[in-house]
Image (cartoon, rainbow, N blue to C red; front, side, top):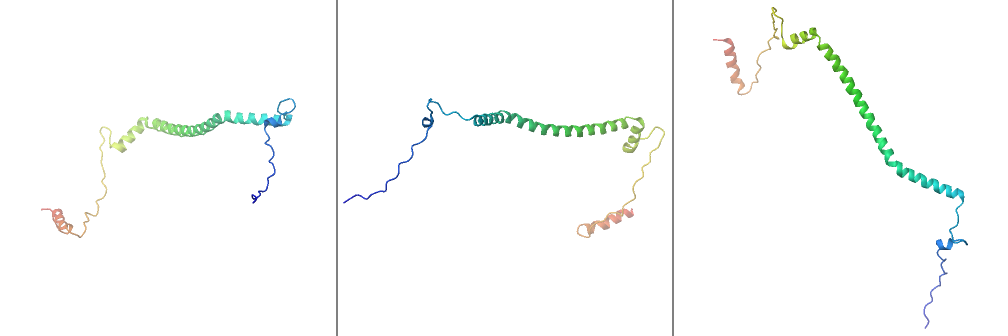
Length: 146
């Protein structure tokens, strides 16, 4: 008996390596000037991005922080100006007297102070549920007096 035949494969092409590309002088072939220039520009751009990437990112974030700080400073300056105007106003003796009369009820020597009370309310209103139903007659009795 004969062994089953297997189809034969064509031989694969030999691998192309650096040794196969070596020219007659024993060196790799020289790239055209345009390709070499493009390669150098690409390497320079990648190096620039790597070197300048972090500082530019930091500078950009600091710009945002500076603008926030400037807006906060502007708000603080506006508040400071408003407080300074108020301080100038209440430093005057007439304003101090007006505030003392209004808020503290103070009067000058020889003046009399009168306080006008608000009108009386309708009275004490209690619910009609226990224990308030027993409390209401006692309160009415106390108001009538002895």
